[in-house]
Amino acid sequence: MRTISFVNIKGGVGKTTTAMAFALILAREMGKRVLVIDATIQHHMTRWLGITEQEPLVTLADIMLRRELPIEMAIRHTDYGVDLIPSSFALSSANRTILIDASSPAQFRLKMKVAAVADRYDYCIIDCPPDVDVAVANALAISNEVLIPMDCSDFSMDGMDYLFQAMNAAAEYNPDLRFPGVFLTMDVKNSTLAADMRRALEEEGVPCFEQTIRHAVGVKKSTRTAPVILSQPQAAVCDDYRSLVKEYLEVKNGL
Image 1 (tube, rainbow, N blue to C red):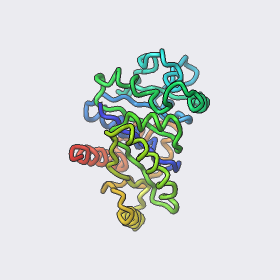
Image 2: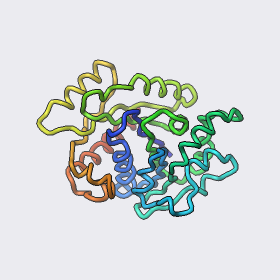
Image 3: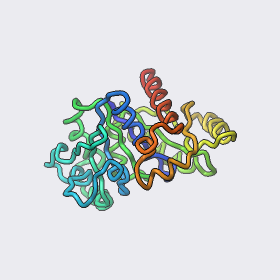
Image 4: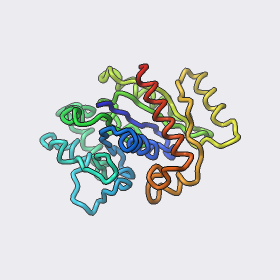
């Protein structure tokens, strides 16, 4: 199983939308077995995949807090061709509890549990919060790659040094961790925003995918109901996501 974490400490950059697009394209269009882990307190991915807090849930928080709890208890089959480990607002208190529990390293709570089901999936997609918390540390501990979405706007590079420090620290306990690059979102047609941002990244030595994700009103609207890859699969922005997945697979094969 190959694990990809989508990470950025800046919110509103299309991280969850892209993580969902990756998961559904890999599963529904490429026939891959995909496990999605919602590692966010906001749990938008969980709700998008049709899982509600009204249901009795075993969530990521439970898996991280209760060592005796097998991961299979949390895995939910969805109607969209992917399996899900859901999240909830309980993850906020779980992060704090784990930080003060000195009985085992905080960043390894998921490692062995995910390993128990690794042979059942081709890919694991992790949607991370706009933070570097305990859940993100656990995601980095089990990831093969980190992909960073960055919007084409002012201040988009703010916090990148902090994020790279966290990734470098994670690489010390996860030597398999790789960083294929940043990908640019909210690319405005007939503007130089993406080109300017790519140039700035290159000057900093940060790799950047060629494929960008265009700015589309449908993406914003879809966040209220369903991700655009489900609600408008024929939209041009969905072709951007398909091209990005293809480029990722080509880069991954060259790593």
